[in-house]
Image (cartoon, rainbow, N blue to C red):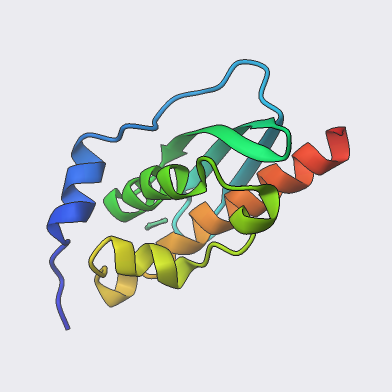
Length: 124
Ligand code: FES
């Protein structure tokens, strides 16, 4: 079993491009992991059913930050329906894998996206 992060994880962890907040977001998703204490906020801007912008604030491990940043890139310019199909396996593959004990961190990002979409649909 590898205990090393991939170059892609390290790159996104050190230099996330989607970190931050969206003012007056169309939807917000907040999730936490009870075991490790990590928390993620995900903000969506949606226009005509298309996710135009996504930003995150994550207090967590390197993997959680890398997953958060990647998720934002993948969700951008997708319709709500397409975004709901993003899976944690897709994120893991895009990051070039993560050490097994860090696989659970991918759930935070996917769950936050689902919650943000839920919030958007409630506000519509
Ligand atoms: S250790 Fe908590 S999300 Fe990674």
